[in-house]
Image (cartoon, rainbow, N blue to C red; front, side, top):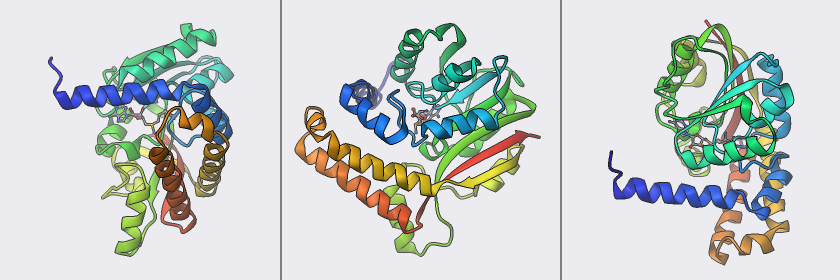
Length: 271
Ligand SMILES: C[S@@+](CC[C@H](N)C(=O)[O-])C[C@H]1O[C@@H](n2cnc3c(N)ncnc32)[C@H](O)[C@@H]1O
């Protein structure tokens, strides 16, 4: 199938973002912010990756499905620390290729598979996995309900799902609501809350935790790290882009601290 000019431009943009994420500067910033160096784009910290492993009760016999896997964070770390196997799903292949190279370097390539697919239309048999996880994926796409249904279909009954998601705090006035949208991920809005979305798609919540305080701390570390590694950033971005980056982090931090933006952690069981 032929790609449109728009699709080609988006592919090129992503390629550039992924290549930049592997530079020494961006990896140093990521280490300071999340305690990892995979070229990640979620706010999942090393500690939260360990929490996901524990909540999913992962052991060496487990097969984990990671959606929106990007360049491998946190799935590869979970494979490394637990000895499990994982299938990493994302749409752009450029991220998955970086994940494959990292798995090779870490000596775990025999325990991972990568699949380029849409999380809303997973190309797997029913009940083919025990466990699924995703980090800040649902706020990056419109079809939240289709993704959760698709997850439910491929997970066996009683299997678990752990995920984080950024959302808009409830009951905001229109001005605060607009500020939350401006400072959140592209598809942060949802007509149906996550409790109801999970219920409708066949999931029973066993844990729902507000992790906004840790989110704010990560954004503070991001600001400090950007300032610390500013010389390296100058080799990757223009002066205007760096100023815009810092202004974005400050604005996001104040939206979290003012209680407009939330990051939550869910663990659910397939009914
Ligand atoms: C916030 S990033 C998280 C990436 C990585 N897991 C991390 O923690 O750094 C969300 C990822 O979801 C992917 N994504 C967005 N929509 C998707 C879809 N419909 N199906 C599969 N992946 C999708 C994006 O390409 C992106 O890599």
